[in-house]
Length: 360
Image (cartoon, rainbow, N blue to C red):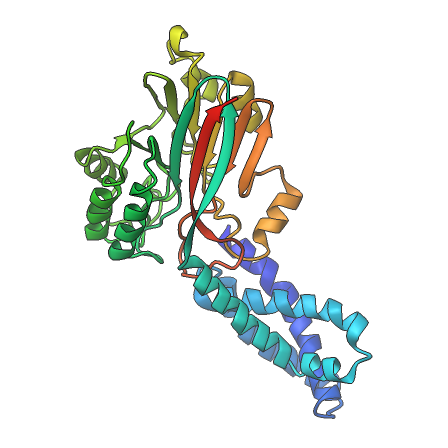
């Protein structure tokens, strides 16, 4: 999948940058190119672009952003090229380089500055309920143990009723020691009704390089009092919590349907406020029709790299980030408290989510 993503960026990149360099030689340096020059330029561009096919490495991220920014500036150039100052700083590449550096700097700042995002929801099923959602911690990518402790202390001051860990709390880049320490620190978040965890596509052990498996995650979390829900249901006095197995996107990962899980709720509890935890924001309409009141998800990172989130929202019905209401049902997708693979987040902010549910 990531190879295809790399090809999508690199092939048009080779074509465009060949044109860009040729224009630079002609307009800035006064060198008029012929076919041989253009072939040589094309070969150089291929050599420069080829490593960017690996979108999992930082070089690919830098290349991808430089390409997107330069193409956007090319569109501006259509209207602004009559101004000689703009034509020079754009054609020379100075503007693209400066904006790319600033934008990547913003992405580094963004992933390292976590904010609380608040939602207000009304319901006729419950008087008051405060929920904190943490998704996509990807422990040790941008947040270390001391920083996690700081954020958990911050969350403790919010006096939440329920804390949910919505998947990808750990991944293949998390050392075993950090997983153990993080499990303990997460358990210290003050709450009234418990901390609940569901697996994501990374921490279910499907990626190479994991220093531990889902069984070890479960053991560490449960030893620290965190409840792991893997296609399971918990019924509290006034709240039901459904935790779904992750629907991993690259193979068969059989899980129960939302309906099958909903039917596990006793009849005398089905009028209680029901929360569904699913790492990926799937089956929203189905869950709304079942009688689920609130669905909490992550996975998308809000489109970690610009403009992936914008494109995904445009071409699909995926709730990339934010909230969506369907009658009395609300779905919330967190953009995540961190990101995956590299400490850059240009497409969204890093957040934990605070939901206040109040009576209508």
